Image 1 (cartoon, rainbow, N blue to C red):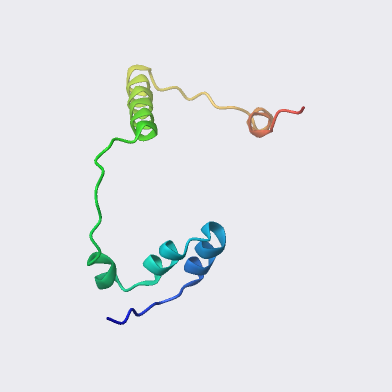
Image 2 (image 1 turned 45 degrees about the horizontal axis):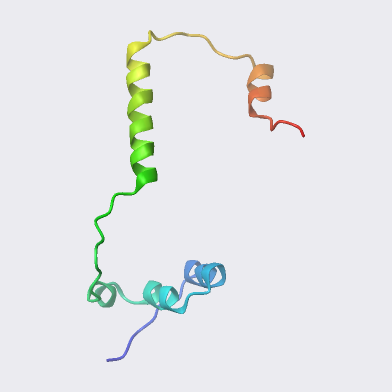
Length: 87
């Protein structure tokens, strides 16, 4: 069975970033060829994903409970909030 590869700029970038031949070959295969490869799903939850989901739910609930305000920062205060701390 011949494997036809389609190399893109993203594939080349990925090769230099990860130096993984299997990843490079997999990314450059045709969709039908990739889908023919059996993939074992682990089914383990991603802890960071769960943490992020819970945090987003908390933020949304807090925003729902608090009354809307029209308070905004002036441009100087906004700029100061985006600066990195020195040191």
